[in-house]
Amino acid sequence: MEKIRVYGEQKVNGKVHISGAKNAALPLLAAAILSEEGLTLKNVPPLSDISTMIALLETLGVECTVSSVGDYSETVTCKTDSIDNFTAPYTIVKKMRASILVLGPLLARFGHCSVSLPGGCAIGVRPIDLHLKGLMAMGAEVDLKDGYVQAKAQKGLKGTEFEFPISTVTGTENLLMAAVMADGETVLKNAAREPEIVDLANCLKKMGARIEGEGTSEIRVVGVPRLRHAEHSVLVDRIEAGTYAVAAAITKGQVDLIGGNFRKLLPTFIEKMEECSLIFEDIPNGLQAKYAGEIRPIDFQTEPFPGFPTDLQAQTMALLCLAGGKSVIDEKIWENRFMHVAELARMGANISVSGSQATVCGVDHLVGAPVMATDLRASFSLVLAGLAAKGNTLVDRVYHLNRGYCCAEKKLADCGVRVDRIK
Image 1 (cartoon, rainbow, N blue to C red):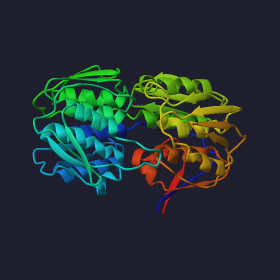
Image 2: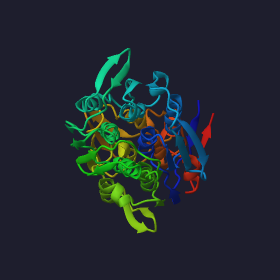
Image 3: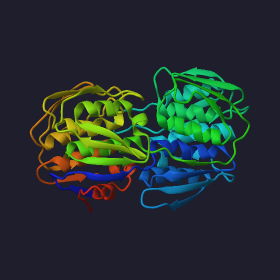
Image 4: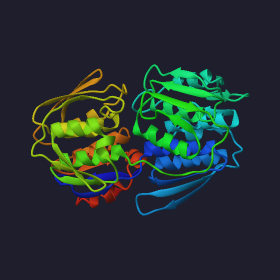
């Protein structure tokens, strides 16, 4: 199993080209199913989760051609006129919960499918009941049998009005994809507002879908009988950008984040980082994050967009371990997303957890230690802590890192930082 050795007391100083967003690319790949003419996606990040989704599409009969475009990007062309399997098997779905995103497109285009239930997750339970309730409101018949969602809509899906009781990103994406070919108008209320959903809607509209309101809490969709081929470039990864901004703060350096409008993509995160330790300046096609001279304690809670992203909570916690005072983090999205606390404590952090709240009392310094990544974002939080620590840190289970961070060692090297991947 691979590990990463992080050398301590290093300073991030340089430029990072932010890759396409995994969380945007996954639903976009699933959307290829909707058109018999296929889909071409650019700026796809070369990550293990992307490979898993491509493997799932190929199991269904999609022909995927992947070509590299430099170190940090791929173009994926999906040929979808020969789909002949309508079962998403457990052997693939168990690797990645986002596999459930093929449910809506398969049902919309073919009227039936069988998709394995995703099961549990390292950071908490992520039920798909709202996906199923929304599809049933559109006229689908749903049965749970032998660990699979068996769905059919023999006369096609029908437009409806459906209100999500809580915000759900994948739920919104699944119902949005199902609605684009439903008969009549569908109104999704209390829809998630994340930029990745806007990116999906933009791609679907290029394919001929009729969508209004994406990026707001009410999305209106008028179904069309078929979709055409389109070419789309995947949205830049706001979580990767935020992670490297934290890297600049925790190492007292600076980094140019290249590739997007990060003020628009990370409004609350940037506001909190300015309060904590960073100065941001606009630069051509990006944003510069520069250490402000001290790390100050802050309080925040994770929320759906435009709130503070849960996917940046672990990285920010690592930073606050070195703040001059007490910070309180309230994790409102996932019930089990503090597993990195024990690993940071091995490095000398002073953190206590009570329910959904973590209290972080800043310490003078962290100490390198052997630690274990517990999930995707936690993996990079330990790398960040290791960069600032005295001594070296050995991070185990870095396969988590491979799921969501493209070429992390090379991008850090471009900023003058050395980390080694070892067997």
